[in-house]
Image 1 (spheres, rainbow, N blue to C red):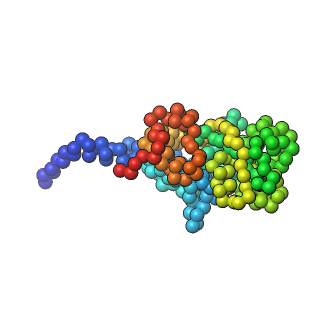
Image 2: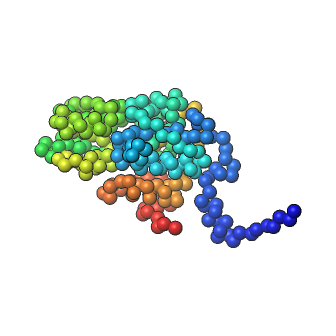
Image 3: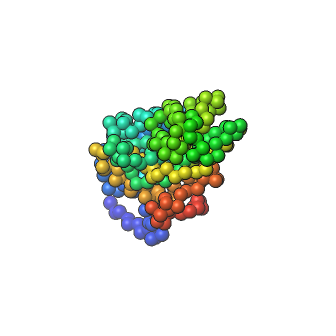
Length: 275
């Protein structure tokens, strides 16, 4: 039997290589909770980061985790969770990681490892327009809702000494408490805060504060998965996937922090044109 060789033009070969998942050829064994699957925790009420729509996981970091799964050759399975149990569950191999920008702190580094940054977190306070809190330090001696276990709690207490923190299991519960006049404000991430103000008449927001580096959690006992995620993240930052998804899911007034561009040289500032 004669086998004809086919020579591809260099441009064609380059295009094929660029569209091939990073580990398609060598495909190293990446240990995960379930073989050939990347199990990712997500929150069902944290628009636009991760939420549920039409019975399916949706949102900015849900889409980004799906892109990561494609790069490392694993099908992504999403499992809903609350924030307080997320890190212990990653540590104990209930999930491989999470579709959530977890603020990196020394205390959390004792529980899990983290990928390279996927955000530099910013936060702001949301209050009612009939009793606005224009500055976060104005929350002193007021009652502020925060998601249970959030690293924003010590930050708020440092900015507004004497603040009364009331923890809730999720953003929905915090928002309901604010609208029902049970708390004076709600302290959360920037994108979530802006989304709440856009969705609810009668809510206003404070100035923005920087809260630190955010990343995906990974079990300390799984350095191979962490390395694979880091390689995929770097690739998706540089090829414009992160920028495209960020601009698709976030409000137009929410910008990618300059620190993220500095962390990933060559990362496009604008959404790349469709090929």
